[in-house]
Length: 139
Image 1: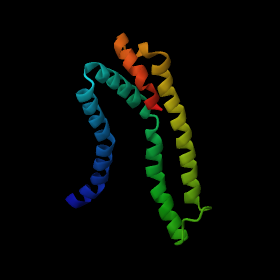
Image 2: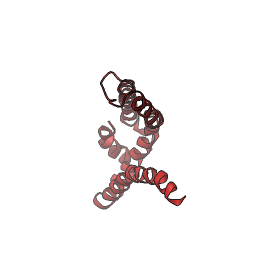
Image 3: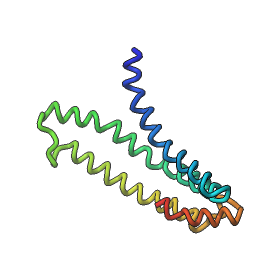
Image 4: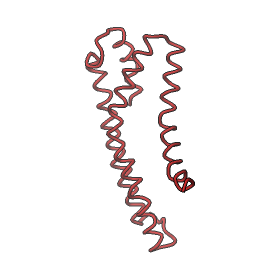
C-alpha cells in the first residue's frame, strides 16, 4: 500500500516542489543581492502574483481531470490515436485556447493594479518605486 501511495503522491510532491522552489530561490537571491528595499518590493509583487495566479489553476486542474480519460477513451476506440482531428486533439486545442486567453487577461490585470495604483499594495514610497520596476516582469 505504501508503494501505491508513493506512486500517487510522488508526482504531486515534485510538481509542488517545482512550483515553489523558484520563488524561494528568487527571494533568497534578492535578499542577498539587494538588501531590504528590493526585498520589500519583491515580496509585494510576489504577493500580487500569487493573488492572480490562482485564476489559472482551475485550467490546469481541468486538463488533469479530463485529458487522461479522453486519451484512454480515444485509445480504446482507435489504437492509432493522435490524428489532428481526434477528440483528444480538439480538447487540447480548446483547453490551450481558453488557458491562453485567461493567462493574457490575468497577466494584464496583475500588471495594471501595481502599475497604475501601487499605493493599493503599500504606502511606503520607496517600496512603491521598487514595485514599479518589477511590474513588467508580471506579464
